[in-house]
Image (cartoon, rainbow, N blue to C red; front, side, top):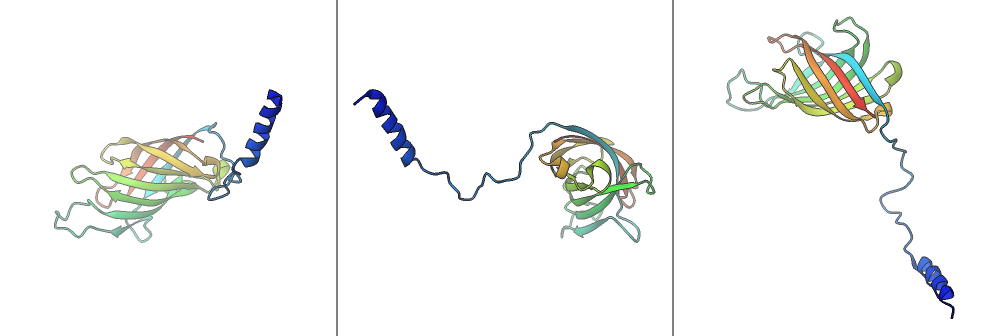
Length: 184
């Protein structure tokens, strides 16, 4: 038998005996995930209000401990904070930050935060950016990690540079300027 004929039979039989692709828990029909190609720089103001009749941040848990009563360590806060174009409370609202922050610093005021910044106006209406990071609030300027997003920010990564614009140490109300660099 000719060597090329033997090789052809091996290829035919090999293909016939090949295991078909698995159709188990995954599918090739998943939504297309675009390769990162855009870098977007955003600037907005975050209004975290714990005081007044209509707060945007509420304490949902406090530790049951004998630590000094002035400590906030272990406090969990749920938020639905407005995002605005400018620092004034009357400035145009472009979205909201929803999520949680936990006071995780025993000796130094620090928050660990998970927030989803959802945009409701403009080019990014319906899209959001997710942040999960440590926030050393005693520093006037600090940085948070962008870990994901939805819509136009699908598969986002990047960072947010924060600068405290206003802080009321008596009630915890704060306005923070966010400058985000997002790769998506």
